[in-house]
Length: 66
Image (cartoon, rainbow, N blue to C red; front, side, top):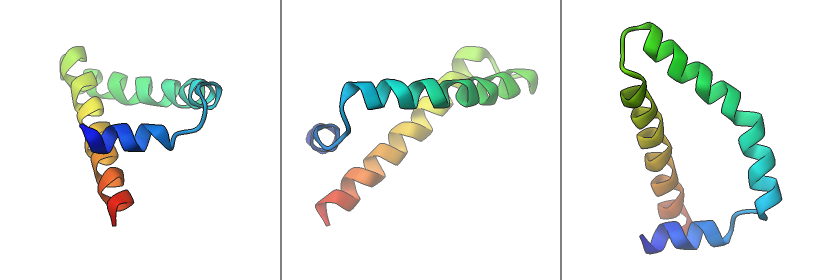
């Protein structure tokens, strides 16, 4: 968890994060909707998207240490 806390400290301010979310959320919802259209339950599709994002954050935190 420390690595994630270190990464968050380097994130831009909350307004930038909110703007980024506003820009990306429709695309993420399209990904989830596509997965649902392929027969995956909505919660499962959302969990996979979150898992992928979590893996990416962990990868970035490892890069910050090197």
